Image (cartoon, rainbow, N blue to C red; front, top):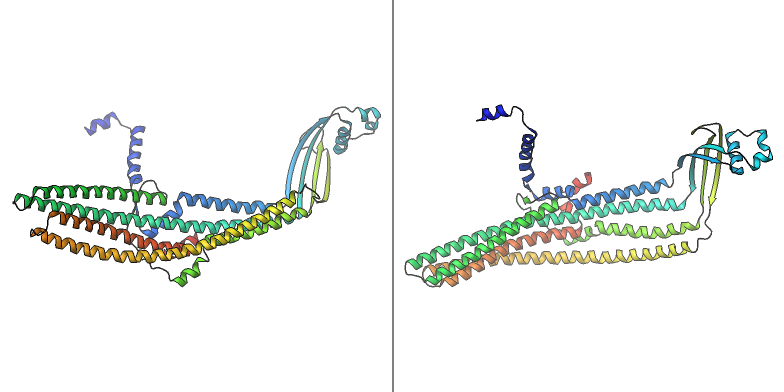
Length: 459
């Protein structure tokens, strides 16, 4: 059969190549990324769309520095003009510039009613500012703004790293919740089997089998919900990492060691958002000085070369040059400068209030993170104790039920308590790890604690 096909199609068609390409690409595209915590964070720092947009914003600020610096550099320009006129003044000037003025052009008729004159004017010139306080201060402000944006980007990376860590841990927690739900289904199946055997041996009631069946259906519902939550958690992780589709958490959960209060207090003052806001406040103060430069003159020098020709562009029938120095001083602009200076002062005060408010908010966030970690740690210990008592309670009720000392309702209630304790322990473990990471975030040391700070500095 294959020989016949080869005989009918001696050369693969375009459709064949297309299908083969699709088959080759689709498995790779559908492959789910499975990464450790640090690898997932590192991948997100390079591929997250929000961070990429922020990096381009920082790059644009660097271009603003170049734009501001250009105001201090010479301006060189080239210009080509064409003029045809019988205006006495322009005609007279054009002939002089071309070096073609003759004695007969002094005739009164020629002066008052000249014939149309063509003039191609080629000009090459430059202008160099010498005293431009506004440009100097503007360059300094641009540099500070670029540095401020760079520091703010570093803080944004920390916040994104925290989101990825939380999503990665959520995947682990969802897996634990799913395993707990699966164990609950297995236990419910065992309860239903025991109830059925007891009923068939005339040791139990038919109502017990119905209650056990209801408990099994509820356990399966919890498993369906756990499956959904696990799938959503993987998609959230993939979204934060900047990939299409879900991503999975691989490897063991790292041991997170919380920083001491002294370390956190020393570190949080160097947080990126605080430093960025401090630089913005300094820039707001500099804007006052920038507005005051409008009261100062602008001094520069310039020069140029000019060629004029009556018949062709870029011609050189006549040539000339000029050198100039100039001073411009805006003496009155309708109180615009006064209002700009007043506006800059108000904006500086506004920036100062934002800075003071941010410092208070950061200190509060650090205090809140400490309390949250202590709460999560206490809840984790209590959840562990609750699981132990629930397991022991379930075991004792199981023994009593098997010996006909307790109804099935007791064992089903004990199973519900055990399922909740299992799910609660998984959730509390996740909350405790997230609270430690949140303390690192509020301290401004998250990337350092994850071992990614040096890697980011190399980028």
